[in-house]
Length: 219
Image (tube, rainbow, N blue to C red; front, side):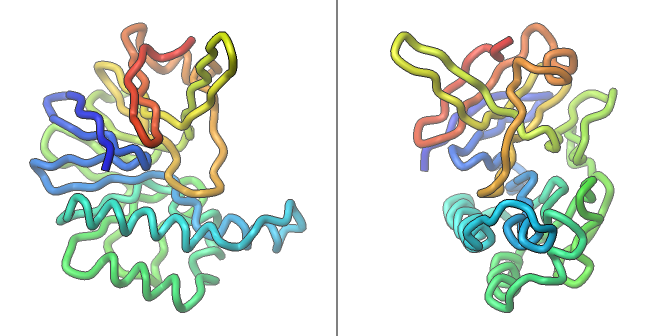
């Protein structure tokens, strides 16, 4: 498993190539914006037809991350489902997979703007949670030492021969924003507003993928 260590707000963290955040000293694995059920929601609304495999793919990647970290707690940072109906329309296989992932560990669903939290599944539900020096919520606020999601940040890197776009973590001295974890999630380039105004001049990006890479936040 490829990881990249970094320090934020008094915590030693690991950025996983999958887009998950691992806080080993607390046993916490954090993921954001799973958007489970996106393909089904698109089909219901008459939108673009997407292959209906994103739920299984997202859960399988999360399963691998949990096998690697053996996390005692999982925090899903909101928008875990693409809308409120998506959680009610999960297949039996998907529900059983989530139940297996939850077994033997604490599981926390943070409320997002797409979903209030899946009340029919296990785990607890909160608008935000504070653990040690860090506060976990879906959308960042004006406080410091917060971990959030929502914006699906991605970085565009240009070389002489090509351009490369990857989801990325963004962090400065006050806030850490996670990339979207879900298979069919898009992204907002970090050289676009509001990310350019939210992040301090010292902000760094960690590109996801097989080899996570830390760079100055592209602007």
